[in-house]
View 1 (cartoon, rainbow, N blue to C red):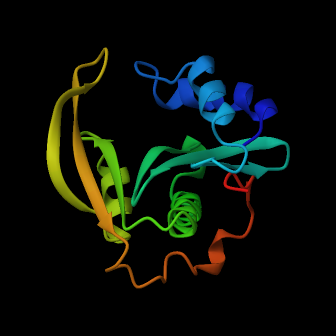
View 2 (cartoon, helix red, strand yellow):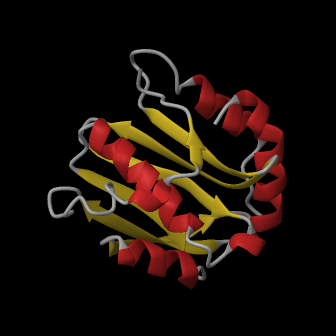
Length: 168
């Protein structure tokens, strides 16, 4: 993801998460911390022609990575784009030498939970009222990279996802 992607990403973000969308400043801050030798973030976008149809981001800290966001345009749901974006994040976690990947997912987002479970994420807890202002709970999920067979990170279907290395 580059700075010029922020406005189209924000448009998609607001469509998908009208109550708790990230702000422009939040995306700028994440991108500002995704450059240079100390960078521990990876943000990617998926484009279809001139249109951004998905985006995802991950932050690594020591041996743990956290999926910060993963979103796909409604008209691309079921197209395989979500798995492609998640595969790209898991590749980044591997490059960052993370032992586990964590994430929070809205309890009312069964589609996303199923995606994460297909990749081996396990629910480990609940955060009450995590998503504001809607006061929606989040299920906390974890993937142990040691138990990951590597097949997701080696999935050739990720072709077509455009991203910028952030750990150079």
